[in-house]
Image (cartoon, rainbow, N blue to C red):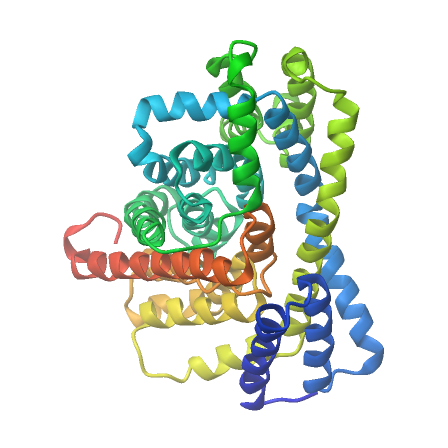
Amino acid sequence: MVTGPILLVIFVVSIGILLLSIIKFKINPFISLLITSIITAFLVRMPVSEISTGLTKGFGNTLSGIGIVIGLGIIFGKLLSEAYATDQVANSLLKKVGEKNAPLAVNIAGYLVSIPVYLDAAFVIFMPLIKQLSAKTKKPVIVLVTALSVGAITTHALVIPTPGPLAVAGNMGVNIGVFLLYAIIVSLPAALVGGWLYSLTLGKKKVQIIEEVSVAEEEIAASTENAGDRPSGALSIIVLLFPITLILAANIMGVILPKGSPGSIFFNFIGDKNIALLLAILLAIVALKKYIKRNIGDAIIEAADSAGLILLITGAGGAFGNIINTSGIGDYLVQTMMHWNISIIILGFILSQILRAAQGSTTVALVTTSSILGPIVASMGASPVLVGLAICAGGVGLSLPNDSGFWVISRFGGLSVADTLKSWTIGGTLSGVTALLMVLLLNTMSGFLPGL
């Protein structure tokens, strides 16, 4: 296969082809992703016999991790919507924070929820609420999607116990408690800048509004007469947060209970994101049945139908990412960057950021970069905690269409590719850069701060 600098050229060309086919020629993203994957494989001279296998492996590995949660999340969201539970949650939330502060509330919610809950699951759970909030506040969906998704990806990449940061802390050999403390200090300003403040600038521009918003508005208007025949705000919030509570409880009990004990096994089971969402669906059916005006089976079938294209696009994004990853692009970039004479904190951020862009996965970027830099940090006199946080910051932004999360945000948020780049990609990148600046600030004060 192709080696050397030409790999970087091929990567740039591949991303260009993908964006051009989707934005300019309006080709369905699922088809565009597969075509671009094949073109990329030929450009790197991948053996023809391995191309199909590479596509299948990437597709399958991606959906094996998030496929079930996407399907269950759509059904769960549909049941909440049919019962107007999301509308009631929106009413309760707005009473607390006010309409003008909705983006801030959503940003903080995404930030907090994504600590114990996997990013995709958190976004899926809250997306029906986002649509309802948009309809009520008249704020473009892109504003609220940006606030939620950037808040979520920031803690997903920076705050333990998500897998990436946990692996970084381990590879850096640092104390988990110290790493967590400084991760919170670094990540909160980053989430606010990239999620909340940046989303407000999007609200001042003319942007695409998804069709679901107008539908939600019509539903709200049409149901005004029956507003009393809805679940209470408290019940709606309990059902909405039920799967999140299960996952959070599993994380807490996993620390408290002895590993392998019956209690630990039980909480690990019910706290699995797939099991938690399945139990949430059962709870929604029981608790909200009398508020759903049509046959629940029909509602579930309709939700399952809408999940099909989302699953295809998400899997195709994983296939493209696998082709990019197996081409050797990531390895080449790491080897090249290691020879640059720059601060290891900056190096950690850049390596992680490039790997994130090249193969799409935040976790893979964090694990790979920390595995390379971990053994040499001590010899360079740098703080392992700060280098680790810089690596995590690099995994936040530059999410491109080879990232399956890009398509989860795009399809669930109802955003065009251009608007997804504008919101999720740019917002996340701003968050990541802000996190890096916070790390550099801490570095200047490291002599006065404990644990650094």
